[in-house]
Image 1 (cartoon, helix red, strand yellow):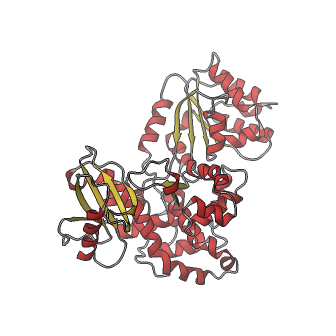
Image 2: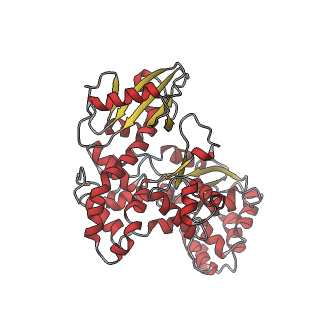
Image 3: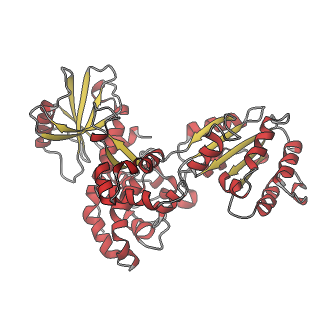
Amino acid sequence: MPLMHNQRMGADAARFPFLNRREEAGRLRSLLHRKEGALAVLYGRRRCGKSRLLREVLPARRSAYYVGDDRESALQRANLAAEIGRLLPGFDQVHYPDWAALLARLWREAPRGTVLALDEFPALVWAAPELPSLLQKHLDGSGSRRIHLVLCSSSQRMMQGLVLDRNAPLYGRAREILKIAPLAAGWIRKALRLGQGVSAVEAYAVWGGVPRYWELAADFANLNAAIRALVLSPLGVLHDEPEGLLLDDLRDVTQPLSILSLIGRGSHRLSEIGARLQKPATSLSRPLRRLIDLDLVRRDVPFGVSPKDAKRTLYRIADPFLRFWFRFVEPHRSLLEARRIDAVARAVALEFPRHVASVWEDLARDSVAWLGCFGRRWRPASRWWGPGVDRSPMKIDVVAESEDGEALLLGEAKWSNEAISPTVAQQLERKAAKFPLVRGRKTYLAVWCPRPSARLRGVATIGPDQVLRVLT
Protein backbone atom coordinates (compact mmCIF):
# COMPACT_ATOMS: atom_id res chain seq x y z
CA MET A 1 0.00 0.00 0.00
CA PRO A 2 2.39 2.74 -1.19
CA LEU A 3 1.46 6.00 0.47
CA MET A 4 3.16 9.29 -0.30
CA HIS A 5 5.58 8.92 2.62
CA ASN A 6 5.94 5.92 4.88
CA GLN A 7 8.55 6.88 7.42
CA ARG A 8 9.33 4.32 10.09
CA MET A 9 7.66 5.03 13.43
CA GLY A 10 10.25 5.14 16.17
CA ALA A 11 8.30 5.45 19.43
CA ASP A 12 8.52 2.61 21.92
CA ALA A 13 5.02 1.84 23.21
CA ALA A 14 6.43 0.60 26.52
CA ARG A 15 7.91 4.05 27.13
CA PHE A 16 5.23 6.08 25.40
CA PRO A 17 5.60 9.71 26.49
CA PHE A 18 3.05 11.67 28.45
CA LEU A 19 2.29 14.51 26.05
CA ASN A 20 1.13 18.04 26.69
CA ARG A 21 -1.85 18.34 29.10
CA ARG A 22 0.20 21.00 30.87
CA GLU A 23 -2.81 23.14 31.71
CA GLU A 24 -5.01 20.23 32.80
CA ALA A 25 -2.24 18.69 34.91
CA GLY A 26 -1.43 22.05 36.46
CA ARG A 27 -5.03 22.70 37.44
CA LEU A 28 -5.42 19.24 38.96
CA ARG A 29 -2.15 19.43 40.91
CA SER A 30 -3.14 22.84 42.23
CA LEU A 31 -6.49 21.48 43.41
CA LEU A 32 -4.99 18.37 45.01
CA HIS A 33 -2.48 20.45 46.96
CA ARG A 34 -5.19 22.57 48.55
CA LYS A 35 -5.49 22.15 52.29
CA GLU A 36 -9.25 21.85 51.98
CA GLY A 37 -10.83 18.96 50.10
CA ALA A 38 -12.48 19.61 46.72
CA LEU A 39 -14.24 17.85 43.85
CA ALA A 40 -12.72 17.57 40.35
CA VAL A 41 -14.48 16.10 37.31
CA LEU A 42 -12.79 14.79 34.16
CA TYR A 43 -14.73 13.62 31.14
CA GLY A 44 -14.31 13.29 27.40
CA ARG A 45 -13.91 10.87 24.54
CA ARG A 46 -12.41 7.46 25.25
CA ARG A 47 -8.68 6.87 24.68
CA CYS A 48 -7.79 10.56 25.01
CA GLY A 49 -5.66 10.05 28.09
CA LYS A 50 -7.91 10.79 31.07
CA SER A 51 -6.68 7.81 33.08
CA ARG A 52 -3.07 8.48 32.11
CA LEU A 53 -3.47 12.08 33.24
CA LEU A 54 -4.77 10.89 36.61
CA ARG A 55 -1.85 8.49 37.03
CA GLU A 56 0.54 11.34 36.29
CA VAL A 57 -0.90 13.81 38.79
CA LEU A 58 -2.29 11.73 41.67
CA PRO A 59 0.04 11.77 44.69
CA ALA A 60 0.75 8.06 45.16
CA ARG A 61 1.16 8.10 48.94
CA ARG A 62 -2.23 9.63 49.63
CA SER A 63 -4.41 8.51 46.71
CA ALA A 64 -6.84 5.63 46.25
CA TYR A 65 -7.50 5.12 42.53
CA TYR A 66 -10.25 2.75 41.40
CA VAL A 67 -11.72 1.97 37.96
CA GLY A 68 -15.41 1.09 37.97
CA ASP A 69 -16.70 -1.85 35.95
CA ASP A 70 -19.88 -3.84 35.34
CA ARG A 71 -19.74 -6.14 38.36
CA GLU A 72 -22.10 -6.16 41.31
CA SER A 73 -21.65 -3.42 43.89
CA ALA A 74 -20.51 -5.83 46.62
CA LEU A 75 -17.51 -6.91 44.53
CA GLN A 76 -16.66 -3.34 43.58
CA ARG A 77 -16.81 -2.22 47.21
CA ALA A 78 -14.44 -5.02 48.18
CA ASN A 79 -11.95 -4.04 45.49
CA LEU A 80 -12.14 -0.35 46.36
CA ALA A 81 -11.66 -1.23 50.03
CA ALA A 82 -8.51 -3.16 49.08
CA GLU A 83 -7.20 -0.11 47.26
CA ILE A 84 -7.99 2.14 50.22
CA GLY A 85 -6.28 -0.43 52.43
CA ARG A 86 -2.94 0.64 50.96
CA LEU A 87 -3.46 3.98 52.68
CA LEU A 88 -5.44 2.86 55.73
CA PRO A 89 -4.14 -0.51 56.96
CA GLY A 90 -6.99 -2.82 57.87
CA PHE A 91 -9.59 -0.94 55.84
CA ASP A 92 -10.09 -3.99 53.62
CA GLN A 93 -10.44 -6.39 56.54
CA VAL A 94 -14.01 -5.24 57.19
CA HIS A 95 -17.16 -6.24 55.32
CA TYR A 96 -19.09 -3.20 54.10
CA PRO A 97 -22.77 -4.01 53.57
CA ASP A 98 -23.36 -0.91 51.48
CA TRP A 99 -21.68 2.17 50.04
CA ALA A 100 -22.88 4.32 52.94
CA ALA A 101 -20.81 2.27 55.39
CA LEU A 102 -17.67 2.32 53.27
CA LEU A 103 -17.77 6.04 52.54
CA ALA A 104 -18.64 6.96 56.13
CA ARG A 105 -15.54 5.17 57.42
CA LEU A 106 -13.32 6.61 54.70
CA TRP A 107 -14.40 10.19 55.38
CA ARG A 108 -14.09 9.61 59.11
CA GLU A 109 -10.63 8.01 59.21
CA ALA A 110 -8.75 9.17 56.11
CA PRO A 111 -5.93 11.66 56.79
CA ARG A 112 -6.47 15.20 55.61
CA GLY A 113 -5.49 15.53 51.95
CA THR A 114 -6.40 11.97 50.97
CA VAL A 115 -7.53 11.65 47.33
CA LEU A 116 -10.33 9.30 46.24
CA ALA A 117 -10.26 8.95 42.43
CA LEU A 118 -13.14 7.02 40.86
CA ASP A 119 -12.51 6.32 37.18
CA GLU A 120 -15.41 5.23 34.94
CA PHE A 121 -17.69 6.62 37.62
CA PRO A 122 -20.95 5.96 35.68
CA ALA A 123 -20.26 2.21 35.83
CA LEU A 124 -20.28 2.44 39.61
CA VAL A 125 -23.50 4.47 39.54
CA TRP A 126 -25.14 1.98 37.19
CA ALA A 127 -24.81 -0.69 39.89
CA ALA A 128 -25.44 1.72 42.78
CA PRO A 129 -27.70 4.67 41.82
CA GLU A 130 -27.51 6.01 45.37
CA LEU A 131 -23.77 6.74 45.07
CA PRO A 132 -23.97 10.38 43.83
CA SER A 133 -26.27 11.35 46.70
CA LEU A 134 -24.00 9.66 49.22
CA LEU A 135 -20.98 11.49 47.86
CA GLN A 136 -22.93 14.75 47.95
CA LYS A 137 -23.70 14.15 51.61
CA HIS A 138 -20.01 13.79 52.46
CA LEU A 139 -18.95 16.72 50.26
CA ASP A 140 -21.48 18.94 52.02
CA GLY A 141 -21.00 17.53 55.50
CA SER A 142 -18.82 18.63 58.38
CA GLY A 143 -15.99 16.37 57.25
CA SER A 144 -16.08 17.60 53.65
CA ARG A 145 -12.78 19.41 53.98
CA ARG A 146 -10.75 16.27 54.56
CA ILE A 147 -10.85 14.44 51.22
CA HIS A 148 -10.31 15.36 47.58
CA LEU A 149 -12.72 13.55 45.26
CA VAL A 150 -11.92 13.04 41.57
CA LEU A 151 -14.57 11.60 39.23
CA CYS A 152 -13.72 10.52 35.69
CA SER A 153 -15.53 8.93 32.73
CA SER A 154 -15.53 8.46 28.96
CA SER A 155 -19.31 8.80 28.84
CA GLN A 156 -19.90 12.49 28.31
CA ARG A 157 -23.68 12.03 28.46
CA MET A 158 -23.55 10.19 31.77
CA MET A 159 -21.13 12.62 33.39
CA GLN A 160 -23.21 15.57 32.31
CA GLY A 161 -26.29 13.92 33.81
CA LEU A 162 -24.53 12.99 37.06
CA VAL A 163 -22.53 16.16 37.65
CA LEU A 164 -23.36 18.94 35.22
CA ASP A 165 -27.16 18.73 35.15
CA ARG A 166 -28.90 21.22 37.45
CA ASN A 167 -30.95 18.43 39.00
CA ALA A 168 -27.96 16.18 39.69
CA PRO A 169 -26.92 15.70 43.34
CA LEU A 170 -23.32 16.75 42.61
CA TYR A 171 -24.24 19.80 40.53
CA GLY A 172 -22.34 22.96 41.47
CA ARG A 173 -19.89 21.23 43.77
CA ALA A 174 -16.91 20.75 41.44
CA ARG A 175 -13.99 23.19 41.63
CA GLU A 176 -12.59 21.83 38.38
CA ILE A 177 -14.54 20.41 35.43
CA LEU A 178 -12.10 19.38 32.70
CA LYS A 179 -13.16 18.10 29.29
CA ILE A 180 -10.19 16.11 27.98
CA ALA A 181 -10.14 16.51 24.21
CA PRO A 182 -7.86 14.95 21.57
CA LEU A 183 -4.40 16.46 21.36
CA ALA A 184 -3.45 19.07 18.79
CA ALA A 185 -1.90 17.71 15.60
CA GLY A 186 1.64 18.90 16.29
CA TRP A 187 2.13 16.44 19.16
CA ILE A 188 2.02 13.43 16.83
CA ARG A 189 5.55 14.17 15.66
CA LYS A 190 6.95 13.64 19.14
CA ALA A 191 4.65 10.70 19.87
CA LEU A 192 5.71 8.72 16.81
CA ARG A 193 9.13 10.36 16.33
CA LEU A 194 8.31 11.47 12.82
CA GLY A 195 10.98 13.81 11.51
CA GLN A 196 9.19 14.81 8.31
CA GLY A 197 6.19 17.10 8.54
CA VAL A 198 4.58 15.36 5.57
CA SER A 199 4.76 11.98 7.34
CA ALA A 200 3.28 13.51 10.48
CA VAL A 201 0.33 14.98 8.56
CA GLU A 202 -0.33 11.61 6.92
CA ALA A 203 -0.22 9.85 10.29
CA TYR A 204 -2.53 12.47 11.80
CA ALA A 205 -4.94 11.96 8.89
CA VAL A 206 -5.37 8.36 10.09
CA TRP A 207 -5.11 8.56 13.88
CA GLY A 208 -6.28 12.11 14.59
CA GLY A 209 -5.29 13.49 17.98
CA VAL A 210 -6.13 10.45 20.14
CA PRO A 211 -3.05 9.47 22.19
CA ARG A 212 -4.04 5.82 22.60
CA TYR A 213 -4.24 5.41 18.80
CA TRP A 214 -0.72 6.85 18.59
CA GLU A 215 0.49 4.44 21.25
CA LEU A 216 -0.98 1.48 19.37
CA ALA A 217 0.50 2.67 16.06
CA ALA A 218 3.94 3.02 17.65
CA ASP A 219 4.23 -0.77 17.82
CA PHE A 220 4.44 -1.01 14.02
CA ALA A 221 7.25 -0.39 11.58
CA ASN A 222 5.30 2.10 9.48
CA LEU A 223 1.90 3.62 8.81
CA ASN A 224 0.87 0.96 6.26
CA ALA A 225 1.47 -1.89 8.68
CA ALA A 226 -0.38 -0.11 11.47
CA ILE A 227 -3.42 0.57 9.28
CA ARG A 228 -3.63 -3.05 8.16
CA ALA A 229 -3.24 -4.57 11.61
CA LEU A 230 -5.21 -2.11 13.72
CA VAL A 231 -7.97 -0.87 11.43
CA LEU A 232 -8.47 -3.02 8.32
CA SER A 233 -8.12 -6.44 9.94
CA PRO A 234 -11.36 -7.66 11.58
CA LEU A 235 -9.15 -8.70 14.50
CA GLY A 236 -7.71 -5.20 14.83
CA VAL A 237 -8.17 -3.29 18.06
CA LEU A 238 -9.67 -0.33 16.19
CA HIS A 239 -11.65 -2.21 13.58
CA ASP A 240 -14.97 -1.61 15.37
CA GLU A 241 -13.93 1.56 17.18
CA PRO A 242 -16.74 3.89 15.94
CA GLU A 243 -19.50 1.72 17.38
CA GLY A 244 -17.77 1.49 20.75
CA LEU A 245 -17.18 5.22 20.72
CA LEU A 246 -20.87 5.91 20.15
CA LEU A 247 -22.01 3.34 22.70
CA ASP A 248 -20.20 5.33 25.38
CA ASP A 249 -22.78 8.09 24.98
CA LEU A 250 -25.80 6.84 23.02
CA ARG A 251 -28.32 4.13 23.84
CA ASP A 252 -29.07 3.32 20.19
CA VAL A 253 -26.25 3.78 17.68
CA THR A 254 -28.04 2.63 14.52
CA GLN A 255 -29.13 6.07 13.34
CA PRO A 256 -25.91 7.90 14.35
CA LEU A 257 -23.82 5.26 12.55
CA SER A 258 -26.01 5.62 9.47
CA ILE A 259 -25.64 9.41 9.51
CA LEU A 260 -21.85 9.18 9.87
CA SER A 261 -21.74 6.63 7.05
CA LEU A 262 -23.63 8.93 4.70
CA ILE A 263 -21.53 11.96 5.60
CA GLY A 264 -18.40 9.87 5.11
CA ARG A 265 -19.57 8.93 1.62
CA GLY A 266 -20.20 12.51 0.61
CA SER A 267 -23.73 13.47 1.72
CA HIS A 268 -23.06 16.76 3.50
CA ARG A 269 -26.43 18.50 3.38
CA LEU A 270 -29.27 17.73 5.75
CA SER A 271 -31.66 17.27 2.83
CA GLU A 272 -29.32 14.74 1.21
CA ILE A 273 -28.93 12.76 4.42
CA GLY A 274 -32.70 12.73 4.97
CA ALA A 275 -33.37 11.60 1.41
CA ARG A 276 -30.87 8.74 1.66
CA LEU A 277 -32.38 7.60 4.96
CA GLN A 278 -35.92 8.17 3.63
CA LYS A 279 -36.71 10.30 6.65
CA PRO A 280 -37.81 13.93 6.98
CA ALA A 281 -34.83 16.20 7.48
CA THR A 282 -36.42 17.69 10.60
CA SER A 283 -36.24 14.31 12.34
CA LEU A 284 -32.44 14.29 11.99
CA SER A 285 -31.75 17.55 13.78
CA ARG A 286 -31.53 15.97 17.23
CA PRO A 287 -29.15 13.07 16.37
CA LEU A 288 -26.96 15.47 14.39
CA ARG A 289 -26.90 17.86 17.33
CA ARG A 290 -25.77 15.02 19.56
CA LEU A 291 -22.94 14.08 17.19
CA ILE A 292 -21.87 17.72 17.09
CA ASP A 293 -21.92 17.93 20.90
CA LEU A 294 -19.64 14.86 20.99
CA ASP A 295 -17.22 16.62 18.61
CA LEU A 296 -17.67 13.88 16.02
CA VAL A 297 -19.46 15.99 13.41
CA ARG A 298 -18.81 19.61 12.50
CA ARG A 299 -21.39 22.04 11.16
CA ASP A 300 -19.90 24.29 8.47
CA VAL A 301 -21.30 27.50 7.02
CA PRO A 302 -19.43 29.74 4.58
CA PHE A 303 -17.32 32.60 5.94
CA GLY A 304 -19.49 35.63 6.60
CA VAL A 305 -22.73 33.65 6.78
CA SER A 306 -24.79 33.42 9.96
CA PRO A 307 -24.43 30.07 11.76
CA LYS A 308 -28.24 29.98 11.85
CA ASP A 309 -28.43 29.77 8.04
CA ALA A 310 -29.53 26.14 7.72
CA LYS A 311 -29.82 26.29 3.92
CA ARG A 312 -26.08 26.78 3.44
CA THR A 313 -24.97 24.42 6.20
CA LEU A 314 -22.78 21.43 5.42
CA TYR A 315 -22.09 18.59 7.86
CA ARG A 316 -18.66 16.98 7.92
CA ILE A 317 -17.02 14.32 10.07
CA ALA A 318 -14.78 16.30 12.40
CA ASP A 319 -12.46 13.53 13.63
CA PRO A 320 -9.72 12.35 11.21
CA PHE A 321 -9.85 8.73 12.38
CA LEU A 322 -13.63 8.50 11.93
CA ARG A 323 -13.32 10.20 8.56
CA PHE A 324 -10.75 7.58 7.55
CA TRP A 325 -12.86 4.71 8.94
CA PHE A 326 -16.09 5.74 7.22
CA ARG A 327 -14.25 6.34 3.97
CA PHE A 328 -12.25 3.11 3.82
CA VAL A 329 -13.55 0.56 6.33
CA GLU A 330 -17.33 0.91 6.44
CA PRO A 331 -17.88 0.63 2.64
CA HIS A 332 -15.66 -2.48 2.51
CA ARG A 333 -16.88 -4.40 5.57
CA SER A 334 -17.85 -7.47 3.51
CA LEU A 335 -14.44 -7.67 1.84
CA LEU A 336 -12.66 -7.24 5.15
CA GLU A 337 -14.79 -9.89 6.87
CA ALA A 338 -13.81 -12.23 4.02
CA ARG A 339 -10.15 -11.36 4.80
CA ARG A 340 -9.71 -9.61 1.44
CA ILE A 341 -7.51 -7.09 3.17
CA ASP A 342 -5.13 -6.69 0.23
CA ALA A 343 -7.97 -5.55 -2.02
CA VAL A 344 -9.08 -2.92 0.50
CA ALA A 345 -5.47 -1.86 1.08
CA ARG A 346 -5.15 -1.13 -2.62
CA ALA A 347 -8.30 1.01 -2.47
CA VAL A 348 -6.83 2.89 0.48
CA ALA A 349 -3.59 3.50 -1.40
CA LEU A 350 -5.48 4.87 -4.39
CA GLU A 351 -7.65 7.30 -2.42
CA PHE A 352 -5.37 8.09 0.51
CA PRO A 353 -3.90 11.34 -0.90
CA ARG A 354 -7.43 12.73 -1.29
CA HIS A 355 -8.24 11.79 2.27
CA VAL A 356 -5.07 13.46 3.54
CA ALA A 357 -5.91 16.53 1.49
CA SER A 358 -9.22 16.95 3.35
CA VAL A 359 -7.45 16.74 6.73
CA TRP A 360 -4.70 19.09 5.50
CA GLU A 361 -7.39 21.66 4.70
CA ASP A 362 -8.60 21.49 8.30
CA LEU A 363 -5.06 21.87 9.63
CA ALA A 364 -4.48 24.86 7.36
CA ARG A 365 -7.54 26.61 8.75
CA ASP A 366 -6.65 25.64 12.32
CA SER A 367 -3.18 27.15 11.94
CA VAL A 368 -4.23 30.60 10.75
CA ALA A 369 -4.93 32.10 14.18
CA TRP A 370 -1.45 31.07 15.38
CA LEU A 371 0.82 31.68 12.40
CA GLY A 372 0.90 35.46 12.32
CA CYS A 373 0.85 35.53 8.51
CA PHE A 374 2.04 38.78 6.95
CA GLY A 375 2.79 40.21 10.37
CA ARG A 376 -0.88 40.35 11.33
CA ARG A 377 -3.05 38.57 13.87
CA TRP A 378 -5.97 36.67 12.36
CA ARG A 379 -9.27 35.42 13.66
CA PRO A 380 -10.10 31.70 13.24
CA ALA A 381 -10.43 30.75 9.58
CA SER A 382 -13.39 29.25 7.73
CA ARG A 383 -14.12 27.93 4.27
CA TRP A 384 -16.18 29.83 1.77
CA TRP A 385 -18.31 28.65 -1.12
CA GLY A 386 -20.87 30.41 -3.25
CA PRO A 387 -21.21 32.70 -6.29
CA GLY A 388 -18.46 35.19 -7.03
CA VAL A 389 -19.10 38.76 -8.11
CA ASP A 390 -19.49 37.45 -11.66
CA ARG A 391 -22.14 34.97 -10.34
CA SER A 392 -19.99 31.94 -11.21
CA PRO A 393 -19.65 29.34 -8.41
CA MET A 394 -16.34 29.03 -6.61
CA LYS A 395 -14.86 27.92 -3.31
CA ILE A 396 -11.95 29.11 -1.20
CA ASP A 397 -10.33 26.74 1.32
CA VAL A 398 -9.17 29.34 3.83
CA VAL A 399 -10.74 32.71 4.62
CA ALA A 400 -9.92 34.73 7.74
CA GLU A 401 -10.40 38.29 8.88
CA SER A 402 -7.66 40.19 10.69
CA GLU A 403 -8.33 40.98 14.33
CA ASP A 404 -8.62 44.67 13.49
CA GLY A 405 -11.09 43.90 10.70
CA GLU A 406 -9.04 45.78 8.10
CA ALA A 407 -7.72 42.83 6.08
CA LEU A 408 -8.68 39.41 4.72
CA LEU A 409 -6.51 36.35 4.28
CA LEU A 410 -7.52 34.10 1.40
CA GLY A 411 -5.82 30.76 0.88
CA GLU A 412 -5.82 27.39 -0.79
CA ALA A 413 -4.71 24.06 0.68
CA LYS A 414 -2.99 21.72 -1.78
CA TRP A 415 -1.67 18.23 -1.09
CA SER A 416 0.56 16.87 -3.83
CA ASN A 417 4.11 15.64 -4.43
CA GLU A 418 4.42 18.21 -7.14
CA ALA A 419 5.93 21.61 -6.43
CA ILE A 420 3.43 24.46 -6.36
CA SER A 421 3.32 26.14 -9.75
CA PRO A 422 2.67 29.81 -10.54
CA THR A 423 -0.67 28.67 -11.94
CA VAL A 424 -1.94 28.03 -8.41
CA ALA A 425 -1.07 31.58 -7.43
CA GLN A 426 -2.77 32.96 -10.51
CA GLN A 427 -5.93 30.98 -9.80
CA LEU A 428 -5.98 32.24 -6.21
CA GLU A 429 -5.51 35.83 -7.42
CA ARG A 430 -8.49 35.43 -9.75
CA LYS A 431 -10.61 34.08 -6.92
CA ALA A 432 -9.59 36.99 -4.71
CA ALA A 433 -10.66 39.42 -7.43
CA LYS A 434 -14.10 37.78 -7.57
CA PHE A 435 -14.56 37.28 -3.82
CA PRO A 436 -17.72 39.23 -2.90
CA LEU A 437 -16.84 40.00 0.75
CA VAL A 438 -13.68 42.06 0.27
CA ARG A 439 -15.53 45.36 0.83
CA GLY A 440 -12.50 47.55 0.42
CA ARG A 441 -10.29 45.56 2.78
CA LYS A 442 -6.71 44.69 1.93
CA THR A 443 -6.31 41.05 0.86
CA TYR A 444 -3.39 38.73 1.51
CA LEU A 445 -2.92 35.41 -0.29
CA ALA A 446 -1.40 32.16 0.94
CA VAL A 447 -1.08 28.55 -0.18
CA TRP A 448 -0.67 25.65 2.25
CA CYS A 449 1.28 22.86 0.53
CA PRO A 450 3.74 20.01 1.33
CA ARG A 451 6.62 21.76 -0.45
CA PRO A 452 6.68 25.51 0.30
CA SER A 453 8.30 27.69 -2.31
CA ALA A 454 9.53 31.26 -2.45
CA ARG A 455 8.89 31.41 -6.19
CA LEU A 456 5.29 32.59 -5.94
CA ARG A 457 5.39 36.35 -5.96
CA GLY A 458 2.85 37.98 -3.68
CA VAL A 459 1.62 34.64 -2.30
CA ALA A 460 2.95 33.10 0.92
CA THR A 461 3.49 29.34 0.94
CA ILE A 462 3.15 27.47 4.22
CA GLY A 463 4.26 23.87 4.78
CA PRO A 464 3.57 21.04 7.25
CA ASP A 465 6.51 21.93 9.48
CA GLN A 466 5.18 25.46 10.06
CA VAL A 467 1.63 24.23 10.64
CA LEU A 468 2.57 21.47 13.07
CA ARG A 469 4.89 23.78 14.96
CA VAL A 470 2.05 26.12 15.91
CA LEU A 471 -0.53 23.37 16.50
CA THR A 472 0.84 22.21 19.84
